[in-house]
Length: 347
Image 1: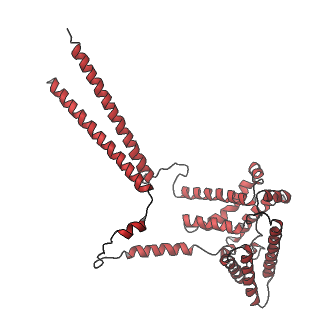
Image 2 (image 1 turned 45 degrees about the vertical axis):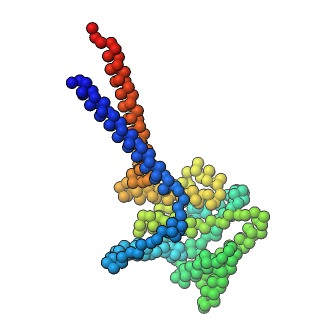
């Protein structure tokens, strides 16, 4: 009776071993196939050229028009959030925060003019662009001034090749816009004076650095606006205003830290702006996660990713191999014990 159970046990161990080996081979083949399909160069044009296409039966087909409606809504929502920067700068709600953030960064960067000039020269930088005309003064810019600044920016963006062509295009728009006016306001004169001063500064910088390539000066208003627009696209309506209104407090806290401000002063203007705005954006994202009930410090793993599937298959393969080896060793050990018991029968 004991011999029969022993044979049954040997058969079951043998079957389990075969099944585990089969699963191991299957896992290896699956990983190899996935790796080949994922990393092999794809040639869709060549494949479609030699593969005959079967005509589809469109007679009773129902178009997915709901998807079209939803996609159109998403596209329009994304387009509607792209408000011109000039309208943002002239907004009575956001303009004070823009001015305060611009003033904090500009005052910190040019705290020591001589040292700043040396640092920018070492880093092939040109510092900051002049303050945006719409942020000058306490009076809210007029709608006509906002439209003029918008047209000048669009002319610069649409111009080709280099900065000189962009400045010429903006100057042409400015001249055409000014020609249709009857009287120039005080804000117009200030804007034109600032534009002329910026042009003179750019000409001096170009003549002083003919033999070396310099980085473009940093446009603070544009940098802040771009970051706020990305925050609005990620976190929804109201994020832009929250981003702008919270920026001055964040800058004040960092710049008030003596150790941090001393190290920041050793960086170029572009590096200072990028570092501060990047870290503030990360803090803003963490705040948004907290408001959604998430824990920003919690490490998360995407269980639906391809990497998770690949690691799962690999670990499963290794576990099955280990189990096969363990069972083989156990079988050898049991056979050795049975043989020793047969050679040394009890008296």
